[in-house]
Image 1 (cartoon, rainbow, N blue to C red):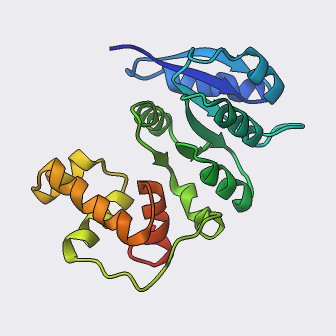
Image 2: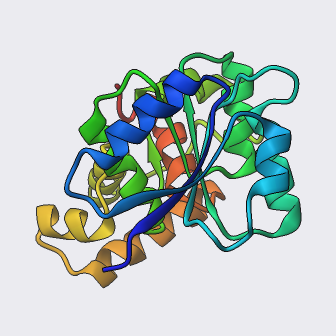
Length: 212
């Protein structure tokens, strides 16, 4: 199994040391391949294709982690992007979600959760911690919040998606085939006019289908 390669930026040295120790203290095959103390240093020093996940702080002196997200997206870089921040305004969090980041967690999360989040993001999944509750009202392209009818099975799948379960895990919990779960999810996406599970969770929270 290839190691998960991380490119990280945080303007505080002690934070970078702590994050590095949290990521490397478990059994997961994770390595830090690049570190930067600011936006310009990251954008000038990061070599495209050298990392699987970009782990970005948001609040930094001068330019913010949001600028890195915009630049990576404009370059067409296929690196997965995960935001790791101690605090930020809901508007900024909503902005990075709208830009298409793959994850957002707080710096206060346990080491095990951080490693799990990074691993899931590297695998092509999305991971959003409890901070997602602060995003709900600020996503730029809010979807319809009422008037959509769901079957009992669709409601079950929405609930399990909101708990962060993968399609395979949902299939196991409901004793269904993976293809059947995917079909249900696609039908739900069509009903809501959305494209991914993050938007589905935001919808479910806004409309109180699920609660945190």
